[in-house]
Image (tube, rainbow, N blue to C red; front, side):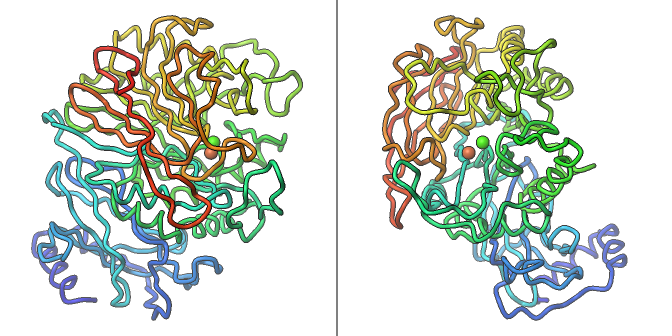
Length: 520
Ligand code: FE
Ligand code: CA
């Protein structure tokens, strides 16, 4: 234990932190391993900022790909510090946390008591070894006027398809309030075979088979998290983590996978995958998995400027419509209305949608707006998205219209291409009035098509509600104030070799009093 941590602990005890004292007294027999390798090889992360704090996360894993990450099967105590400066001269909070073997020696500390809307630095310590330093901003106070927010939207990081260069560039974006990660944090695929003509390149390989057990998923997360570009992004800003299909298995929905596995069997796999998701994400106890399922949908407020509705579009959905008759895990017709969010989450969304903020962000993951693919270039996953759930989409439109909201921005990703446009108001009428802007980000590294060249997609021309479809790796950077929400489409020139550079492809503006997008 360092002198700083010891002093801080004594201060906390003197301050009447009886709960901490009790927790320390309950501490089980601890291991105090001597680390020959960096115990913080998976880096650090912060997440889910509130006005008085945020979650800080790490996982002890000195040998990330070995069983248990190279840790003994015992609890290990580590220290944490939060400071007002990156040199840790003014430490404002500190404490101890238990890295438990049940949770792969991950820790999720919900730091509280910080000031609102300001930057802090944090780090962990074990066996006298400090972690790298991370930084995050707290949210504004409820009801506070906020000049501006800056966020990034990113996801779909297939390790085998490309380098995480886009994450490196996100780590260098100044003053991010948060990064919304819309999912596909890992991909479950086995080791890729030899790349073939007309197929996407294989840039690096998963070292093992498709994950099924908890340890399999932990190893997959460890592989991704040791990536230095992803580590840098986590150290640079708080994340709002979600998940999509590849955290478990391609195109799963509810208790069904894509290969007709009996639901009760698939649910065992889903529970293992979701525990691993919780263990590796900087999320709060509210997202802890119960009976194999985390509650991932939640709301975060950023003063009067923005309400963020984080939604779970996987866990509660009904079976989707088939794109072609007789496809795998889908139905050709339904005898009852479909649902994407499930009744309870849909009600929860409606109850909180009109909170009075200037902006209502819907973190919805996959593409919500309809998409006429008559000028077909490549197959895409339209029916896995809201196109396979037309009743749910109609109810979402109605929910926004009933509340007379003009300030809803739908954002996410999953198509591995930018889709910038709006959600039309009438079912089956792409030219009907806009209901909400949709800003759909491209992928960090996953490819959308079998090795097609990057660039604009001609299908935007046959979709009057879509301003742009563009296939290139990158992310979205959003500058949000009371007058407008400006999205910069950030693209890397390549993600195949080191050194990809970033540029802004285009910028689109949304106004809070007028749904739809305008090119700047
Ligand atoms: Fe993806
Ligand atoms: Ca996906």
